[in-house]
Length: 211
Ligand SMILES: C[C@@H](N)C(=O)N[C@H](C)C(=O)O
Ligand SMILES: [Zn+2]
Image 1 (cartoon, helix red, strand yellow):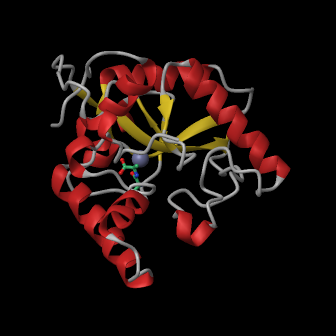
Image 2 (image 1 turned 90 degrees about the horizontal axis):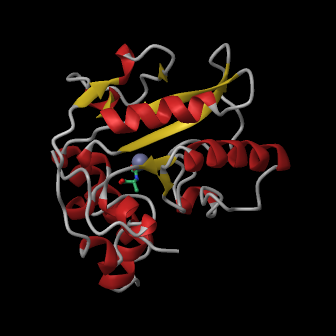
């Protein structure tokens, strides 16, 4: 499993093709949940190419299922606050961990700011819901940490109910098929055009740099 702290991620060359952010609340057919809402509405924005891929993924879902988007673009400052907050929580829980382990474990839940997918507008956190907006069981809450879920948040985890495992496979098939890449410690995190996507797909540089 390649974590966002892996030096190969930071080594990917960063370019930006200037594609604009679009507000997913204005894209017909996509559902956006308000739980991560910020006053500026950053959370609902992604690059246009990501919005296109989400629409393609949604079309590939079994009848009656929809994507439910929770968070897209995340400014640098917000990313830094989440990173330091979670790192400090882990440090309190595991005072014996050396610095390199603390850093690596932190990045199982949150990206270092230098390579942060959400800060490019290329990443999105999402889940599945039915036609009435009722969320499907995915085995853990979206944003469950490895600590609190005993690693059940890992996309390939098998210690979750079979029905949740099937739901994850539906999500994986639709989003992978649309060209997006999952972060394997978080079933809900998908990206396109950022450094992690470039590394995992063998592309030499990003499409989207930090905004
Ligand atoms: C904090 C969590 N919701 C998240 O977004 N994690 C990924 C890995 C990130 O920080 O990009
Ligand atoms: Zn994410």
